[in-house]
Length: 194
Image (cartoon, rainbow, N blue to C red; front, side):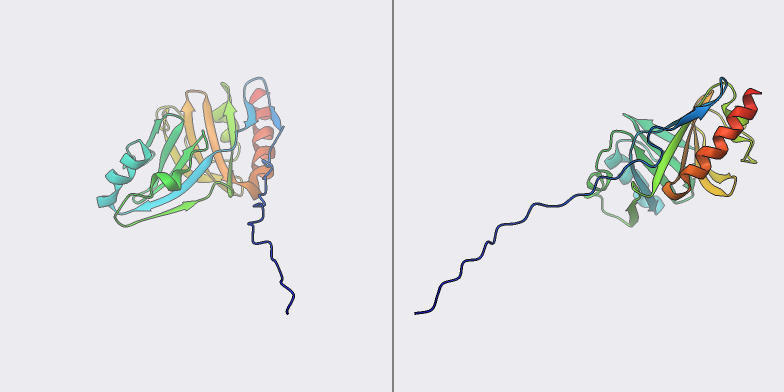
């Protein structure tokens, strides 16, 4: 008679990695331009044909902007227009944006870039001056009003700027460039305060 063999077929516990925010604990700037690391957020790079835009906006709970520099916000969720068929969607509450889009039919592409990007918050009366230390864009309120956004450069890094108030910006950048962007912004903020 053969020996019986028993196997443990239980499912092992799922291992999960916890990512440390790249700028955790950093702050800087001056009395006129303060920098802080933004809290982790969920982000999507979204591309869509015009006929799908309304359905995507409905699923996300906000109308996707369709004009240059346009943005839309609702319940700590932001949709930033980056091009005729491209948006950056940010959910500060960390909601599952991919799940929100699961029932949408039509032609679109959604890529979760939550772990690729991070953000720096820049506030104060010298915020635009600090940004202009490395960004050639006109950030006057007339040219770049509250709610305006754009993909541009800051120093040698691509960033997405989003003006959240008269004297406040959200600077989205890739994690790998975030120490560089933060350091250059801190220098610009110190110069703005001089």
